Amino acid sequence: MHGLTRDLPAWSISLVINLSLLLVLHAMVREVQRQDDPTAITSIVDELDREEFQFSEATAVDQLGNQGDTHSMTPSMSVATALGQTEKPPEQKIEETLLPTPLPFREAPDMAFEAQLATAQEVKGTTDDARGGVEGTMDRITYEIAASLKERKTLVVWLFDASGSLEERRAAIADRFENVYSQLDKMGARGALHTAVASFGESATLMTPTPVQDPAKLVEAVRKIKVDESGKEHVFGAVRLVVEKWKTFHSHEGRWNKLVFIVTDEKGDDAEQHLESVINQAKRFSFRCYAVGNAAVFGQEKDYVKFTFEDGYEVQRPVDRGPETAFPQALQLPFWGSGTEWRLRKMSASYGPYALTRLCAETGGMYLITDDTGGYSFDRSVMRDYTPDYRPVRMQEQEIRRHPAKAALVQVAGMSYVQSIPVPQLRFLHVNDNILRSEITEAQKPVAEIEYRLIQMQQVLSQVEDAARNLSEPRWRASFDLAMGRVLAMLVRLRGYNIMLANMKSTPKTFEKAENNQWILQPSSSIDTGPVIRKAADQAREYLKRVIDNHPGTPWATLAEKELAQDLGWEWEESHRPIPGLNGRENVTEEEVRLLLAEEEERRRQESGAAKPRKLPNL
Image (cartoon, rainbow, N blue to C red):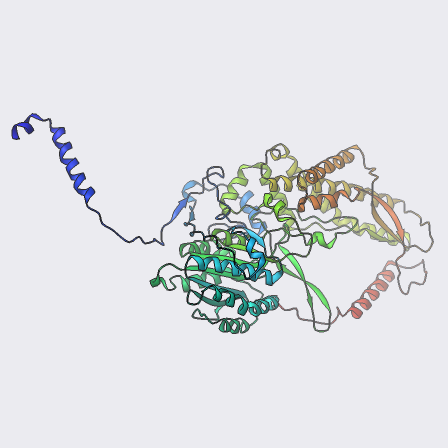
């Protein structure tokens, strides 16, 4: 043997020894119980292009705007970040941290508590309509809880907005608790389902410090929620509180599913501070977040709701319900000439507000639209092609920087957010020529500024027309073409407006009927402002028709149709405006007319109740 080994080369001896060791190690088996590491993190650097890294529909969501992982932007801040800053060097960038997606629920079998649930589909990370208001929402929530219980024991946390505007919805949900939990109990949920209740406003409150199983205690907890009059909805801080409170709930018993149902009617005021950190925390400890809320108003930050005082007087109150995107894409432009139909001002975005929808999608939950906006609404199957971008804001920002057309659109949309474009004066008193000329002079003052801003918008968009042809996403294509068409149309109207006022001021027209005392500018098909303006009018129509043809059944097409339905030229129409106390006098001064009109306006205010001092509560 020794002689044999002496004849073998050194590498052969080494090979034999190593193979022997490997065989010994292979025979040694140690069984270790697998444990999920809650701290495991997968990092994706910001530099990844969209083509290199795609979020799935069930895990991607990001949409308001942030300066970093924990800051969301208002539209004006988004514009400043996207267009007014230089690119940071790589060493100063912060990696985007994406924690593992929670395991998906198994498909639950058909259940008997509602017929509509027999055909419901599990689609996580999206927005969905909960038809039937609160009742329909509770049916869907029952389905989600039941599906969770089919997999494992479940902790449910109800997180209620404590603002006054949610009193009715809180009460309606409390009324259905008994029914929901009795249905779940029939499935054998007793012992496997624990529920907690919390509320939020300026701060968060745990209404049930310890999760309970008795539905009566849940109803009692909800009804004890005190109205928060601060006007603030710190929803993301509240989510962080409940996650921290119950992140290890009954962990000694093994894994639990943990569902958070956020009941609110606004977007939340603290996304800038907490959105990204809350997403990471919720995913780390396997909390799945759902929102029971309102649809965002298409392309707008504000919606308006009617508030009625005890004496019956009504006002419109602003509420924060949008926008549905991280960066502004829809221009805030009025319709001149025929007014704006109220349904256009309250068009549904078909999606929830950005930050809450992102939270739901990133954690594998869903934004359930309980109430739509009350304006125009759109087919969900059509709007799926126009899903907002829910990737992290920094990823979106980098893409916008790289695409001139997107950068231009965000810049122009941001300009319309920061300072709205008003409707010019269209009615002019003509009691005598002096009063008419004075009215026109006052109307001309703001028009110069409006024209300057519209020209700025038109120039920014025109410079990137070639790049806009390469836009691949339907939402961006529709937004750019609509913006270009509406800006051009408004410029055409403005030029015609200026000429009409100048001509009337220099040579006042004469009324056909002697009793008339007012001129009104009405839309007209006649455009007598030269070939350049007529060409711009043709371009505006071309862009708007393209939106209608390529994006039917969408908010973009609806706005384009409204714009095209109104002629781009102007004509004068005479009318009579009653002025109490004037008694047909012609030799009257402008000051006298103003005083008479002011007195009439005050009388109307007194009759309507508007003059009564009132304190508006925070909603």
